[in-house]
Each structure stands twice: as C-alpha cells, then as structure tokens.
Length: 71
Image 1 (cartoon, rainbow, N blue to C red):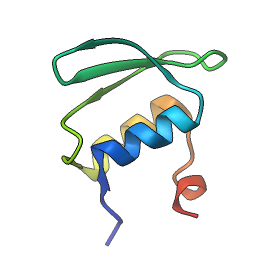
Image 2: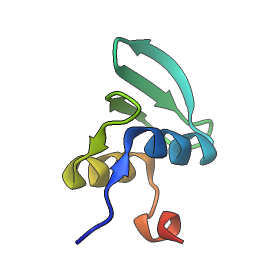
Image 3: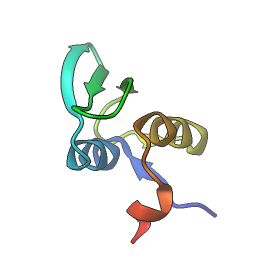
C-alpha cells in the first residue's frame, strides 16, 4: 500500500522545491515557481490526508518525482 501524505507534508515538499505562495482563498493555496511553468493549487487543512490520485496530480503539476521525495 502506498504511503499516505498529510497536507502539511505536501506543503513542505512544494516549498522546499522552490514554489512560493501567490494567493490564498479559504483552504485553497496557489503556488508559483520562479523557473517552472504553471501554478499548483493545493486545497485542504494541515492534518488532512491527501488521496493518492490528488497527490499524483499535485506532483505532476509541480514537476516533482515521487521517488525523489520517498528517500
């Protein structure tokens, strides 16, 4: 079974990769990267579990490899 991630863990991964918060409305946060294209939207409370499909989508948008963060 795949490891489940908490919302706050994903925030840390995204921010450590260089993404920075550009806007927030309620529980939705939008992040931009200085050199990567696009915007990544994260929605949730800090202790929420992120479903596997949502995690895959976030990592794909952020151009982050899941294998890189497991180590």
